[in-house]
Length: 83
Image (cartoon, rainbow, N blue to C red; front, side, top):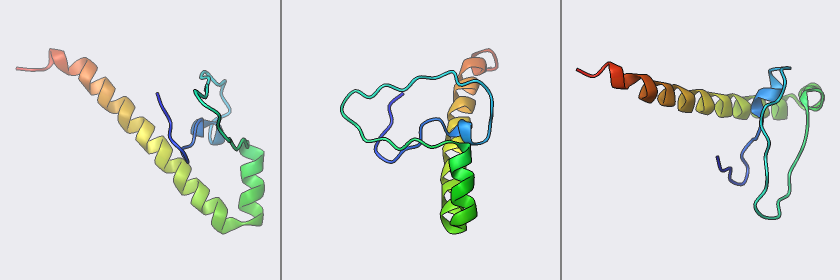
């Protein structure tokens, strides 16, 4: 999986406290912003508009991930359903 500038890596960490199962490796020098659930809560408390924009962005990332997973699932099981 490849990410581009401005994309969120690890969006589930904002809504789930489960064990992380992925590793990210940069193929070239990169500037990254690292923050956790507590940081996000502080942003939401102090700057609600920014917190809202971040929430919408994270929700978008999660929906995209679910959509990709769903398509892969359908492609995996649909072979047995074709007439």
